[in-house]
Image 1 (cartoon, rainbow, N blue to C red):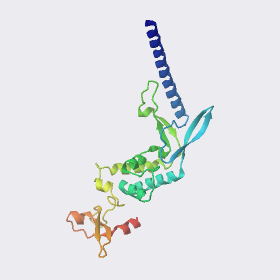
Image 2 (image 1 turned 60 degrees about the vertical axis):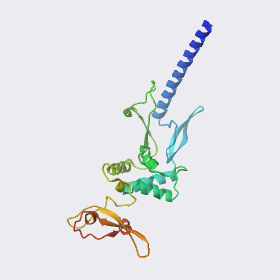
Image 3 (image 1 turned 90 degrees about the horizontal axis):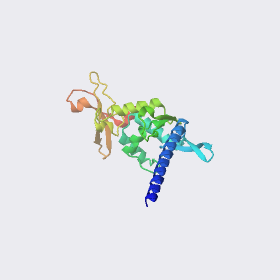
Image 4 (image 1 turned 90 degrees about the vertical axis):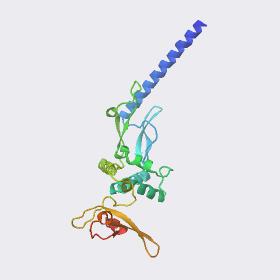
Length: 238
């Protein structure tokens, strides 16, 4: 009775301490693994795959390498974003071209996640918890280098552009629009300089077409003589 219960209590305490010690050892090993430049596991980001970089007995140490076909998609996405293409346009274009995100269709959500991943610049951060199980603050994350898909400068330019196009800085219909130069092109007539907005019309043959028009002339009742410019013509010029 009593002796048996005491034995069970002691066994449970020993097992609990062993589990705590094992968890501490695992976290120490993961942090050391990261400091040595190895991948600690988890979902591998789009554009990369793992390979065995080192073997310690039966333990395989993994690192990341670029998947050329996926990296080409990433570079195109970042190029479009830097050119001012809106998220909806990028998503629609990728899906129309049947480009997949590892079998899934692109959405505004996973596109934003892709554009925000610093790992594409050749560095990621390991956030393994400390010995007490506490996730470290940002300044204590462990930086790990990997191959770069794009330059850090392009990543930062894209981030700055997305920030400037946030709803608090720019109207959502402009920021997410499918037109290349909306919010960028400006009227070149003397004394104007107002932004160009998009308009549309239908020809006699029922074909819809689009054109840029001076916002001051259209919406502000100002006497600007800027002519309408076909969207295709101006986009190609850029």
